[in-house]
Length: 283
Ligand code: PAF
Image (cartoon, rainbow, N blue to C red):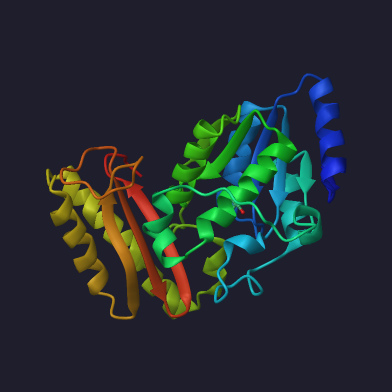
């Protein structure tokens, strides 16, 4: 695996792989890799001969009171994990390489960024879409792989790929969970034992709702109430939202179907967790 920290260096390495006839698979990350990220690498390897992973904690997607400066980082550990899983090119640009001047142009979507994560984290999705567009232009992959845990992010990036005509196949890989159901996240490292136990409220609420759906409940509002009632049994968990939405517009559904998605975000102490489940999909 080659580690590269300049855009020019990465482009040259990708051109060499292309000249060998290889397809390019891309896994964008903010590092502090866990098994969830590494499964994205597995997906990319199934689709492409050369796998590029970026490892960049993107400052523009963090709000002023968010955890940019304390976001967990472990570059040497990440490099070992990426290499062990078969990444070919690891792109680790410094902020000055990605933003040599303060960005004066942004990719923004009209509606979705004001809902759910977008409402709680103003500006977040503009930061995400802009950096992903930059990375897509730098890497020019055939296939890009994202995790389903960030469901709204994946929905918006899929829309950006379609509407801005990026010639990229997008793969969204299922969420990877601990044995007890907690969705893997780099931010889980913030949780002590008590907070971690409370963090299970999210998956419990999602499982209760998918079970109610499996038993025949179809009313979106009732499924939402079931999720919120489950969360309310955890007094130390502060819920930002729980909703059952359609997978594209992400608006709450009146009548749920198998492709509707239950989405949840909640705070356990200072740590904010998100999770989701497709109602008709067995975990
Ligand atoms: O999901 C993430 O880790 C980030 O939002 C992404 C897509 C790498 C953009 O910074």
